[in-house]
Length: 302
Image 1 (cartoon, rainbow, N blue to C red):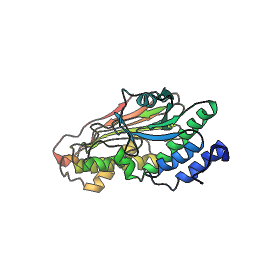
Image 2: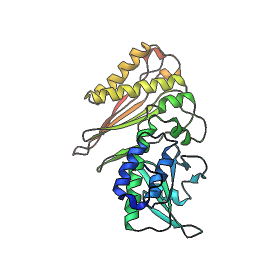
Image 3: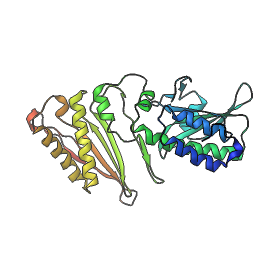
Image 4: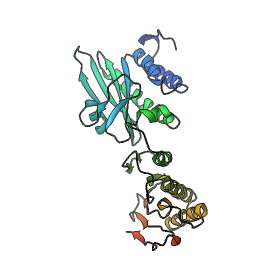
């Protein structure tokens, strides 16, 4: 695109289309430059992307140079928490427009736009830009260390790094149901994890707690999570799912415990179909007989 392009050189819809095309090959570090080029051409002014940190306490600028914003006390945090537009007037009379960045139920952060005036046309372009930007960020964060670095406030332990690599988004949802989960402590644990996903109209949710907080417990939890997903995607019922997790662990360790991380994984697998009959599930604690610990119970969730 011509860097000297003005507002009148094409419609806003055409500019939005070109924004998506230009953003696809751009690296995360280049994304703010691309965004600003098109935002200014559409009359939306300067744009700043903020990402929420993994503990959802701060909004951190994607590119260094802007201040971090507290989620609980800033107007940007209000826009993030309420998933709604917020506008404030700056010291020199310009407008700061804050819009949430969300991919479905998953909230990613906010985008700030600076402009002199705001009318209905600009507002529609602002909202459309925010929607497209959220999809672009989602597509890039799966392989971008830059985005992962900006979303962290301190170094992460290796076992946690391994488990987090397999975690789904914090929030997933449809027009009928939303599932949200967080992992705390966010930087130290090695054996705790969650999983959730949809199969047609059925929500599957799993909570995993590998014994211990080391690399072995993280590996055990990762194997259990893979077993759950493999069973679900093969059409297994709940009992078959738990059996798949047991088999996966036995195949990996041959029934021999190797430290607390591999002795057991209490797991809760819940199916919540949005149809008459309500949720069903299994609460199960797994321990290997060779560990010298009594085998825990299986319990159906009413």
